[in-house]
Length: 441
Image: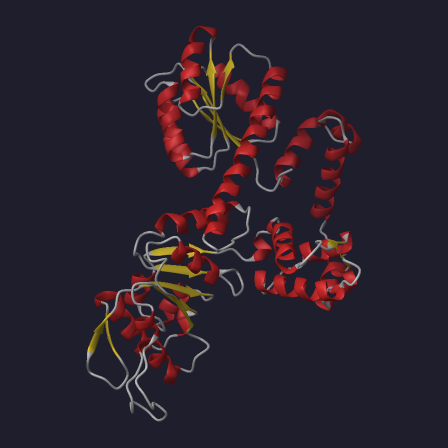
């Protein structure tokens, strides 16, 4: 597990709160406790909460009111109601309103441990189903964004929520992280999806030609302008313009772009006639625009126009768990028949490499490897030299902490319980718990 599991316990009985708090901490959960139900809102706004155990009978807010607040603010949280026998009917009502189950008190710690295990399994299954459902509309739109990373899913969810508006969007991310793909996803989920999606790489066109590309020109406007020509904004009328590498725009073109965003007006190069255009602008950059603002090379007023909604895509090295998913996705895309296997050594190299070119680099490496893998299995020898070297050096570049983490993880997988794991490792249970918390095991 990559992220620490988190739990919130809400109960105005101090003894139950203390007992459950200690229990969840020993189980490796990041634990938050509230004796005042009115404090719950602040916790769920500031912390990611996986599970919430909420007492049904509290004042001044009862458990049903707390349940409503949690479901409104953090719909991904799995909520369990804590109840006495006398109020089981109310607990059933809570289930109808979104709680997963109820826990009847009094209960012993063994019962709580088994019950929590079932709750966590339900939570994980619900999360996976939610992620798959989140990806289905992307597939339906013709755009496939493959990830299970929590932060990436949040950014995709934001993109989906603002898609139907006309608001400008700024997508930030390193080269190869999928900025164009996300821009296309926003367009295809928008009310403009039946209109053109016109893209232009601002860094790929010489400055003297870029203005003509964006806004068009008339015959004779400059040497070689043999006829009138529509620019990208006119071609995209009613649809979306995607400006990739927008940080590369010159100050003069920044001013013209600002005018289009403000008044929907522009002139072609060499012409004084004003044209009106209705487009949505999605911009992208692999540079830090905040730094560009400080240096005075990017207009502040244009930045705030483009930055109505800001989406940041993570580099692949910060989402290593997505690599197997992406590999499978690309293998399916590139294969005409049976999917080739990937050897353990090759997989280790693919997972340990830093991927400075991100998903684009991964796609290129995999396409090359599939051409070389004549026997239907991708081996380490089929990967580029830099990946093989990275895999080799990573074997000798582990810190003592990394070695310890790997060793504890292996023992935990083989031991029947934490007691046995602590005995094998030669440490007490409390030390094992601290190390599990430290390494997110």
